[in-house]
Length: 414
Image (tube, rainbow, N blue to C red):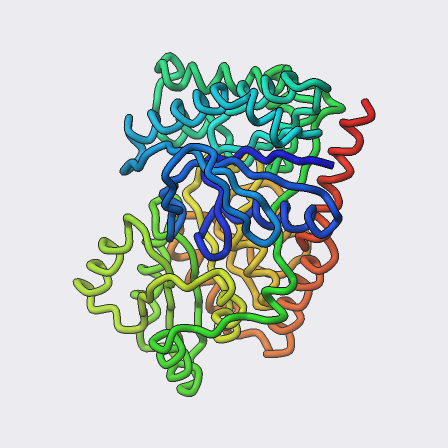
C-alpha cells in the first residue's frame, strides 16, 4: 500500500517532535508498505529543522520518504504562524497533481494540529486516476482549544476557518482516527458518522527502552548524587509551559524543604525562567532544573526517579481525554505516577499505576508525594509494574501501527 501522511510539524527522533508520524510510518515500512510524509520545513516543536532549497525536496529517514514544503519560520502563536498554515495548505493544493502522479497514494492521512489540512488532503485523495481513501487524524481539538484555552471568540475569522476545516473533515473523510478517546460524541455533533470514528492513542517504541541512550554528563552527575544521598526523587520531564501546570509542583518543593526529598524538572519552555526565578527568590534548595534530553534518553533518565509528576491546567478540554507522550513514557518507566489532570479515565487510572489528584493544587501534590514516600518499597514497585504491563500489552507503536493499518484496509474495502 502507498501511504501519504500529511503533517505540517512531523519530525523524527533526531529532529525532535512531533514523533507520532515517524513512529507509525516506520512500523508501516516494516510491514512492507511505502510511506511518504509531507511536512513543512519549519516547526517550533523541532530541535533541528531541515535546510531545503525548494518545495518537495526529498529526504529519506529510516525508509520513510519525507517531502518538505517551504513554509517559513515563525515565532509564538500569532499571525506569522497562521500564515505558515495557510502557506502549507495552499502548496498542498498547488502540488496535488504532482503528488498523485509521483506518490500515487492509496491512503491519504491528514494530521496537522489545525484541521484545514483536511481540505487539500481530501482533494489529493479524490484527485488521482484511482480515487484513494482519506483518513483524518485528530490529536488536538482545534478550534475548541483556541476558544477554551486561547480565549478566542467563535466569531474570530481564524476560528471560523478552523471550524469549517473541522466540520469538512468529519463530513468528508472516509475515517477519523482520534488520539482522544472521549471525543466521539463531539465529532458526531459536527458531522461524523458513528462508524467512522476510531481511537488510536500515542504509545512507546520498545526498541528505545531496550537500547536507551545515555544522559548528558551534568544530568548523570546530579542524579547520581541525589540517588546516593538517599533522596526520594520526584521527576518531571517535558515542556515548561502554563499548560503543564508546573508552578504548583515548584511550590510543593517549597513546602517540603527539610525532608529527604528532591524535585527534578527536565525540559524547556516559556515558563522555565519564571519557575527558576521563583525557586531562587524563595530559596528553594530541594529543586533542580536541567536542560531537555533527547527522547531516546528518557528510559535512562526515569531510572533515577522515585515517581513521575504529570500535570495540566484544569481545562474543560480534557473532557475529551488525555493522551500526552509523557504519560506513556512515565508508565513504561515502571515508576508510580502523580497524575494531576482533570480528565475521564486514562491509562494511568485503568492500570492503577499512580495517584490521580486534582490539578493546580499544591496541597494535593504534597499529600500524594507523602503517600508514596510512606509506602513500602514493594508496594511502589508493584504500582509501577502495573503501568509498565499496561503499556506492553496495549500501547507499543508496533501494536498501534497494526491497529491503524486495519483501519486503512477497512477504508479501502468500503
